[in-house]
Image (cartoon, rainbow, N blue to C red; front, top):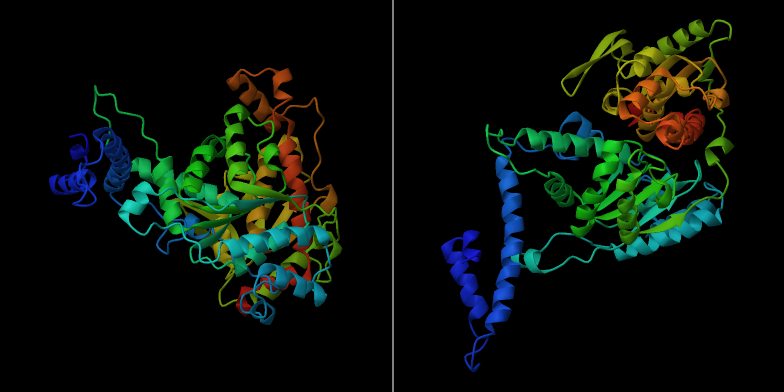
Amino acid sequence: MLLCQYLSPSVSLAISIKLLKPASSNMAAPIAPLVSWRYLLTVCRSWRSLHYSAQCAQLARRPVPSLWRTAAAPISQLAESSVSSYEINSNSQVFKECTGPLQHYDLLVKECVLRKDEHQRRVMQQLQSLHEALRGYTNESKGILSKLFTRRKTQKGLYVFGDVGTGKTMVMDMFFAHVEVEQKKRVHFHGFMLDVHERIHRLKKTLPKRKAGFMAKTYDPIAPIAEEISDEACLLCFDEFQVTDIADAMILKQLFENLFKNGVVVVATSNRPPEDLYKNGLQRVNFVPFIAVLKEYCNTAQLDSGIDYRKRVLSAASKIYFLTSEADVETVMDKLFDELAEKQNDVTRPRILKVQGRELKLSKACGSIADCTFEELCDRPVGASDYLEMCKKFDTVFIRHIPQLNMTKRSQARRFITLIDAFYDHKVRVVCSAETPLQSLFMQKLKDSVDVESRILLDDLEINQEVSEELSMFTGEEEIFAFQRTLSRLTEMQTDQYWRDGDRSQK
């Protein structure tokens, strides 16, 4: 009777007969009632789970945008980043000669494209083992009964952590290029979480309005969102796994627990070991259980050779980082912009980009080149979705008048970190002018100075000064840590190779 609440009469009867019917005509009696009752309860609970998912799907008047679907929202389309390095590109001859990421790496070392690094090779060996284990892997169940009664055995992924510039992204991209999995996606973690929040928002908008006088049950959208993502990819490769947002921190455990149980394999790179994620963050006690989930489903590997390879390949390109104190710097940058603009099939004009129903106004652009000031990009209330839209439209961006950043300009510093992360991940070229040399661009504030923004937040949260000194959002620890990555990336962005890789006119 309980089962019939969720199945049609014909299906319910068929399953009941099948469960209670003897396996052979020679059997003296049917299976024990207690066993069949427990089995029916298992079927019922499984079916309720599917029934719930089906109800959620029916609620949607329009589909929630997929992270990688062609018709998805702009932010979703931009979350995925391409593997564009010439050493890893699947069209290259080197790639075609290799059967896996480890052989590819060894060949690049032999050809002197890469410097031999035992730390990198040890990680490549682990990625090679994962590559072999995932050959032909899928998280799709063959049938409805298989989906109901078979528990997926998820292959363990890999979490690679280490200092900036040690080659974490390179080894992951090499693995991603070779791994023989049909449904695989490589995304920047920041873009992935933006898309998750967008999905949650859209799904909640489709729910029926609560009627006056009735208490509606709390709706949890995480499970159906995880199911959608699991249907789209069984292998997710995340670059720059970093948790700084409390909204992300509060949903990560449930989100990834569902992804892992749905058979999704995760490979990630990060500057921090799992234990240090969201270190000293607000309400971290609620985040800590996620670390155990991550370590249960992912092996960890440290890649920390102590060498920042980005700084070893200093630019032989034309100068693209200027000091505002230099003579005629504005004229020089204007001339460089004009030279690049001559190759564009467009006129120099203001541009307005549409971002999630909002407008991002840029005062000067020509084709795929934008000429912006730091104030335009980081002093205004803009964020990752705006920067990702710029990555889609432009391959070269001028950033003028970058001030020396410190913790009294925390919001601007965070936006600048996010901006450079997005540009670097999408191979957008930058030309900068700044008040200070690159290595002096970020200065930690004095410990006893608290900016107005932080004081207001401290008062609102009723947090005293002593407690605030332990929280990373007030000490600036996360910003200081992330800015090391930003400086390293800005250094690499000045190289010839990066400049060539970012030229979309050649693709």
